[in-house]
Length: 75
Image (tube, rainbow, N blue to C red; front, side, top):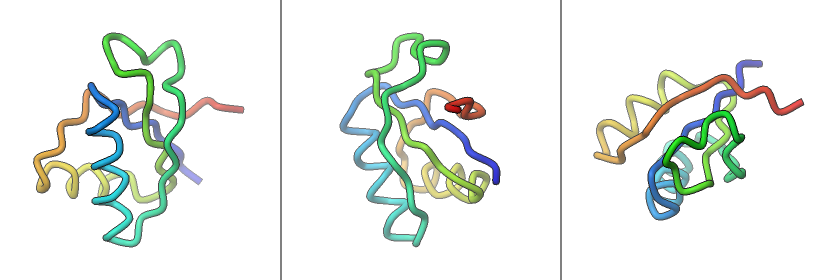
């Protein structure tokens, strides 16, 4: 299972991203951004499992800016 953290600049973008992906059948979870990925973010991110490339394309198409996509070392 490939887990990735999608980092956004604002909580609003994080929430919009979650809703856009949910409408496409992609389940996500809003999480606190891991410290190593915070770099100017709002402090909240989306955890996406497996459908990472598809999620990136959906967010681009919806004009929802993503600051970065990183591996999730949450264990």
